[in-house]
Every structure is written in C-alpha cells, then in structure tokens.
Image 1 (spheres, rainbow, N blue to C red):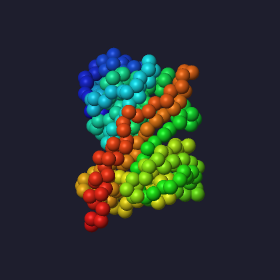
Image 2: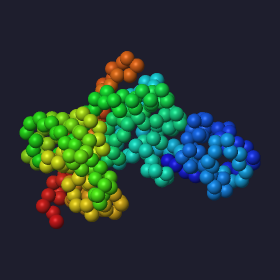
Image 3: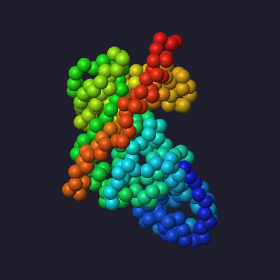
Image 4: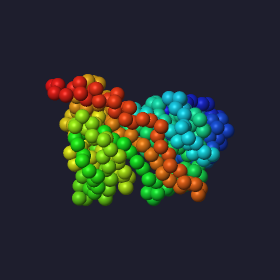
Length: 307
C-alpha cells in the first residue's frame, strides 16, 4: 500500500505523545514524521515537537501491504530477498504504491529497512536490516565499498574478452530525461569490470559485471557507452521521446520490445559478499538467470527487422 493519509481527532494532547501513544510510533519515528512535514492539524503543518493540538490531525503514514515476498536467507539481524524485476525498492515519494519495503515492514516491523538500492527493473539480491544497529552497519559497509557486488547482464553484440571500463559519470542537468546520467570528464570516477560468459546467437553476450564503484546507473551507462547496451534498457540507447514515454508509462508493451529489445531490463544482481559481525557472507540469488534469458529471447527475435 505504501504511504497513506490517516485522520484522527486530537484534544489538547502533545502531538509527539499522541503519535507515540495513539499511532504506535516510536519517539524517533514521531519526530521524523513531524520534521518531514507529514503531520498537520486542521490543514496547518505541525512544526514544533512539543506543540499541543486540537482539531483534526492528519498524518501520512506507511502501511505495509506488499507482494507477499519472503527472504531466501536471514539471520537475527538481516534478511535477504530475491527481488523480481518490476518491483520497486521504496514507494515512489508519497504515492500510494507497493514496494519491497512493504514486505520488509510487514515481516519485521517499522524498525526494518532496506540498506541499498536496485533499480525497479533490475532483479536480484537485496538486503534488509531488521533493526537500527544492523541498518547503520550495513549501510556503512556499502558506502565504504566493503560489499562485493556481482551482476549478470544480457547485452547486445559480442564481447570476446574481459574488459575494464573506467569512465567518469555525471548527472546531466541539461538532459531532457532528468533521471539519466552521462559519461563526462567532469563526473565522478567509476570503474566496471566485465567478464563474458556466453555468446548467444552471435547477437548477444551474457556477461558477469562487477562495479567497483556505486554510481547511479553505472552498469547501464558504462555498457551502453562501449556499444553494448543491456537488452531491454528503455533509457540508454533509445531516443529521448521514447524514454520519456516509458517513464510516463505511455509506452505500449509492443513498443517497449521494439525499442529496447525485451519487456524488461535484462540486468540481475546475482551475488553479494561482505563481512558482518565477524562472519563472512556470500549470498547468491536462487534465480536461474539463464532460464530468464530463454524466456526473453523469443521477444527479441520476434521484433528483429520489424518497423
């Protein structure tokens, strides 16, 4: 369900206490809701945490109602999910949309959280913390590049040997499509290792990709920049008007396949490796990505040569 607005009558109580006692917030969650402007009384935002209120209190709250996804591995402190393509990590802003976070909070409560991100169309391994301590430690590990990531991708064209792509990435503020990034000498350094695993139909290559940095859309823009776009990518390698229509959900399934080559982005977060509380974890997605390719390739073949 994501974020929803709930209304309550308040009669002189402190707003912070009301959120804790009546809505079940922790003091930290109540303070965060006020700081983020999610609490109002008779249409006026609550600004002060010690403020007393009288009237109709409206609060934007997160109510989990997800996809029914469950982890394939978990410990006392974290859980690991195999996210399907098409499932968002978080709800889109305050929209009433489902996401993986719904399932995480449904299973482990409001103190649980996702500690890193995957694009909505990227499938694969995602870690959720079960408590604030684990969240802090795991997020720090990702920020410090202490987590080794491995992806699988189906790309256009034949890649005959291993590659190291070192190209800086920048946010292109002049780009019509604001979510896209660009290769630019003024950008932040970015390095991606590419290892070919299998050439398919002399038209595609299944590759293992290891990003040594964590820039937005790094794998997608790096592969596209060397002429090997990821099959199914609706942002890089298509005209901007097509990318814009995709983002606005105006692109038909047939148009999506024609322009990008597949009904989904063929990028899969295959594995993660890291140390937590002295234990070394090597987490591998249970999804057989090669089988997923087998399901997708008929779409690519069917549109070959169509106009």
